[in-house]
Length: 275
Image (cartoon, rainbow, N blue to C red; front, side):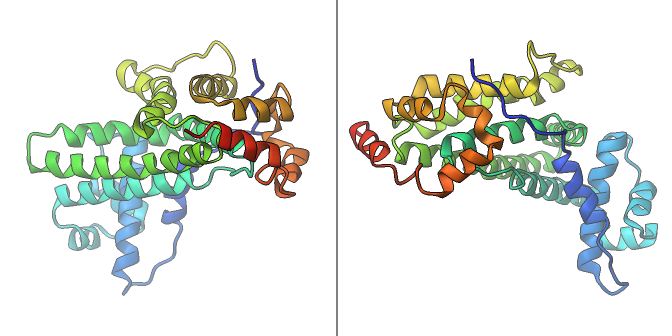
């Protein structure tokens, strides 16, 4: 079994995105910035009290605006909910971009998987996910629009995985297969043990091992299914516990010096494993 890379402490990437938006100063004439303050305030209200308990006076207070200003900016509550949902999806994408990228494409995928799992476990994200579920199940015109927004947001997240898996195939580390199937094979176990578990049982999944190791096991299983002999070669070259190198200065230096992407043996392996 490979060892998980260790992050020094848990981060609240999605929550940080919301709080950063609420801290942006605005002038009385800046209705554009005020609107984003309101949307961030809605997301915070959803996260801290829930969709059904959210109150407009509380939202205006979080945004630092008067109730009258909030009413002027968003006279229709359904439209406010839909815009907040779209803004939340945008902030999730921004939170995804905060992962610690790695020059080694294998370790980069592992870092992204661990980062994704971290976001899915955030209390703010869990509440946002529940609010989205409520909106897409409403018996009104809101359902169709909310579903469209949710699908568009999922498509942007999916693109992260698409790009990185495609790079691993290009480098000869993964065998070509349906990218949709590959993305599902990697992300579904992560989602099942984080977001889906919360939505269905309102309790927390207790992993057999540490969370980071559990996610590492999922990534390792993914490579066991799709990994090529090129992957096995590079894994041996990095060492048995290759994933533990994700925070290693030596591993970063190895990649930055070109020994990863420009290694002739890796190129030969890549060509050998490309149909």
